[in-house]
Image 1: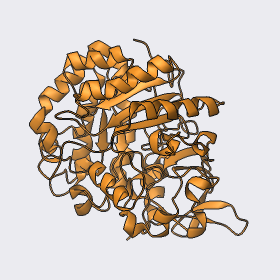
Image 2: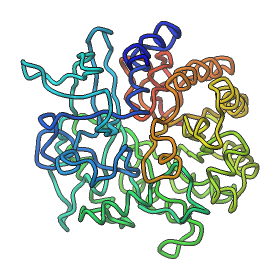
Image 3: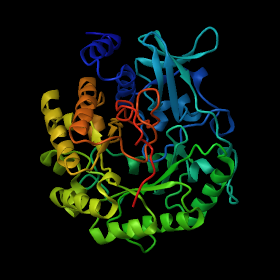
Length: 443
């Protein structure tokens, strides 16, 4: 068997147009990394920004199985530079896996290094504890619990509803651990507010606004579990929309407002826009019809794939195509037992979906699948999808975007290797740096 080093160097050679940084980043995202005990942080009281578990676990083990990495949290993200591949600055979301061939540990001089197969391949930078994390709300809750930031501080992630009403084997998306992540944090006695009160969100944002003097935070995302009935007496558009309305009234224009929600009827989408949201993420999850039905049974039952796609297109008439950015979970296309068995087939299917949306001016983005062990697909596919799939996806994503005359989507910060801050996939690292990246949103 070839080593992981052999694999990444083979792919770097075969796909020279994909930044070498993205090859390593995708491998870290799909397979995780381990931390030497000496590289772990002192949680909320240290100098390093800890992992907040902002919606999913994004780990390859449950909290009880992580040992020291559960008791002393790993950082939210790391930044890689230098090493034998001369890496440009690369921000990577931390997904912990004690069995990973990648390991973070200090060298003899005390510098943190990323090791692969025992060889140092990059220097590791840790996110400093932001000043606003050192403050608490009046009720004692931490800012990290109510309004954590990711993407090296660019994005405030507001998971307003911590669980999903698609519940149980017949409704939950087969790759999603939002409900288990809620359960494991409650079982561990960690603070993990189920429904975040609007006034707490506003109080946390006021602390961020006051102490983020460098204005690193540029956008917020409102999201949480799907709502099929009501929460606090409100259906999905009004439940999430009320946060946007309150934020925009209190902090007009301070951040670009984004919402990740179901593909809702046009009248609901219009309400999102009226509430002040400027970017809409009606995630389509996986393109293939059969896989959508199998892997997203609740969404198929309540809405259906064809209606989901029609609603995405309708929403472009409300927000403008550029500001509709549906996500898909890159890698589940190849999840056994039902997924594609060859990279060629998976890429062909995914490209069909990209072309469908990009030809209409809508630019999807993707999250690299983390096979969490409590999910059906994670249990049966602990290794995730082949790294070659992820690298070829980056290549075809950029080619499809360029063929349709599109540029990097708004609300994600700068594009380009060495510049991107989007941390849960390498799509922004793999696009050319352009003036449109991070631009203000119209509409």
